[in-house]
Length: 176
Image 1 (cartoon, helix red, strand yellow):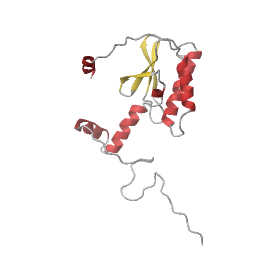
Image 2: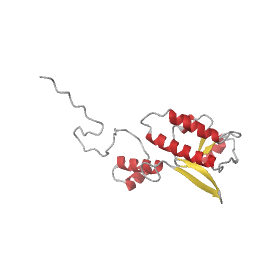
Image 3: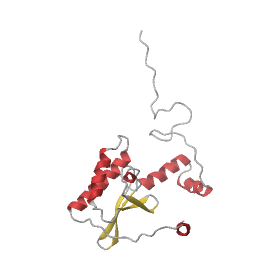
Image 4: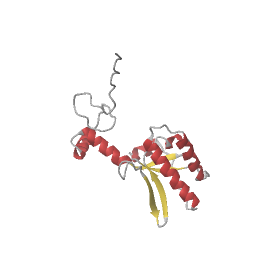
């Protein structure tokens, strides 16, 4: 008689104990947070894990799960800038800078003289090398590549200048 293969629990299988909070793979972590933050999280949900999940989803998926943050924000009539959500992969482009302008919201900055179309090519390269499980990154990079491509084809993309300031220690204290 052949031995029956042992069942290996899936990441979403409850192996006894407390019921699962999430329908997706999860794991316990330990984190120390300020009391003020814990109070804010309690206002979101009595369960801290669920509160952290809700806040993280709201920060990254502005329009709900499955929709990465990518916005065209008007800065003067008829002129806008692209704002993106957090991305580990965009940081892999060595010459691209992500300037955080609000929590988890970034302005894209490229060096003077860099053609904006170069970003489209860099995005295609990133997309070609993503791991299978990088769903959020794939969604954000695809949406950004598509948007930049549309703007380029419609001749609606151009560069402008912003004022940059070299930071000194005393300046850092003012910005915190």
